[in-house]
Image (cartoon, rainbow, N blue to C red; front, side, top):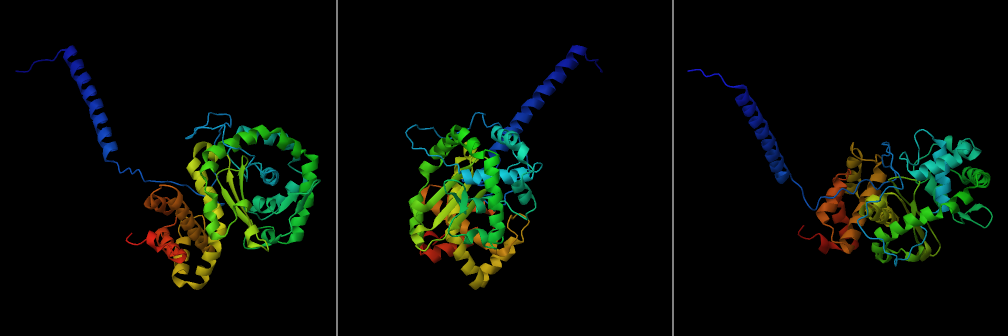
Length: 382
């Protein structure tokens, strides 16, 4: 017999069905997150290159609450890690591309302040000079480490081989670089950049304190002595103007123990990821050791040459030039060795991090480097 359901009964059934659906969804979600393949060893180190993709934009206030994973210790010695030379040259490059923001597309309070202060100098001859260059992200750093303040103006260091090396720099001849140096000195004077730099010293010291506590205090600079680098001549620079790139440079000396090696990293990155900043610093210093090794292997070892060429063709890489890819491979292998010797990071996690960045043969290159360095015990049985 057919019995007509009351309106109340229908509502009760509908309500029960909705509640059941909600609980079912929650149950599915719980099951999903419990079977999802998450590993404690998973590591995403990101790109530590000087060709990192900085096309995405964001509006991040420099005064926002930093997300530290460490405590600021007032007893940790702090010095200013921001370099006036690099900030000055980077500013000129920034002014040369007001739309794309060559140096840092991302905008912080500091970027706004510097843009407003120097907006009237966007057509200065130094800026126009840069605007007409065929350049790259490392060009400001290559120039900055090749000059010094002599008391009344910027001048070139004695050894200018770094800035005129065609395989490294985009500055070409020393005469071309001298032309820019003259314009840079004029920009420095007429723009009063020196006053701006010192007016913002508290800001630079704030970031220097963050860097000192989050990275520098755990950085094992003495580890590099075994490869011939002198800790007294290893220079770290943090820059609040650049974003998400790491850059290396080194200036040779007659006494190899006085070779000056630079590593630069974005200051803002340490606010949010101290480990990645640490990784970048080590990576950039490692270039000075690993590049010559990679060049020898690339020229004499057919297997390594093939390995570098094949992975340079990958769509995931930022290094389409085979020799550069070879240098990056050995540099990343040496960086992994540093973290194996000085931290409890998983070797496999470090491999996976580099693999995700377009270095599928990193474990094999690490194996080659360990044999080369006489550290074969690290890879036996792996």
